[in-house]
Length: 269
Image (cartoon, rainbow, N blue to C red; front, side, top):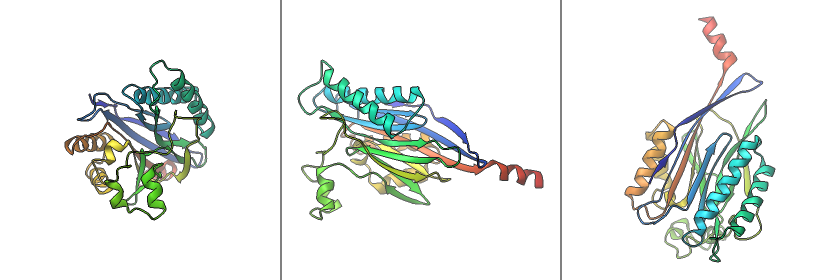
């Protein structure tokens, strides 16, 4: 069953006079071939993440849900940083290991997303990633994957032994090299990005990228100006294209304006 989050908005006033507006929505679906949904997501300011579980019928669901639950606690505590995220992951790994339904089949989960790092003068977006779920950024009309997959095929591509086209049908295409819960908590990879007007982030599990190319993702972002509309369109397309896996997607739209300049402009008229 598809679970669609209600569109949300948030405004952040900066000391410079700029105002950052954020609009977002997220949804998940078990797809057309899976019996249960091992994906989970969290879209609560300032943290937006997707977790794609793995390891047995129940194990993946346990791993993704416990990881998201621990991160939701961190959001509720009022501070999101690399340190608080990593503390939440340590707790999640312990939860997964102690759960009575955890299996020995490599139970774990991917984790990917972004958070807004607070600063009264100039906040920054920070991406985080463990595994092969992805974050994309549409900026100035160009879509870029800003996370690097932790997967066997990505290592082969990086080593020059496999082309991106060959990777799509590779027998190890689903094998990831890092996850939350399969061993000691491993810190995510982080990248920082400036907050720019017009930016659009897409955070998704591989259930989306198995069914939509990067071109397809950009197409739906172009056709759908609202975050919720883009989420619904991409999710529907992934299901229509086969829905071979659980599908989860979050879209974040960023607006930035200078409130002082806007006020001056109105007064000048």
